[in-house]
Length: 169
Image (cartoon, rainbow, N blue to C red):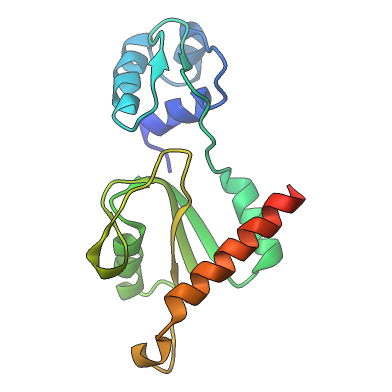
C-alpha cells in the first residue's frame, strides 16, 4: 500500500467533497492533487473539481485493510493477508514471493491489478472498487496432478462464502 494516487483515492472514496486546503494539510499541495486526480482517471475514477474542492463523481468501495485482516484472522487464522494498492498481477507477485520463501497460507490482495491473468492465459481485468483480486499461496505435498478440479471447487466455495457474507452484512 501507499502509492500517492491511492492515498488520494482513499480520501475521496467516500464521494464527499474534500477541500483543497484539507488535502494540502493532510498530504499533498493542490497542484499535486490535480496531477494525481488525472492519474486516478486512468483507473476509471473520475475526479470532479480537482485542485480546489474535489470529489469523486461516483463513490468507490475500497477494501479496509484492518477489517480484512481482522475478519481473516477470525475465520481462517492460518492465513496471512497483505493488501496492496496496485500491482501488475497478484499471481505473479505471489509466485515471486513463494520462490523467495513466502509462507504457506500467504494471501496477496490488491485494489487494482493492471496485468492479471486467469486460467489458460486469459487476461484478468479488475474494476476499481468493483472486484476482489487476490492470490493464495498454498503448498500441496501431493503435486500438481492431484489438483485436478481444484479451481472450480475453490470458485464454488468462494461464491458460497460471499453469499453467506452478503446475508449477514
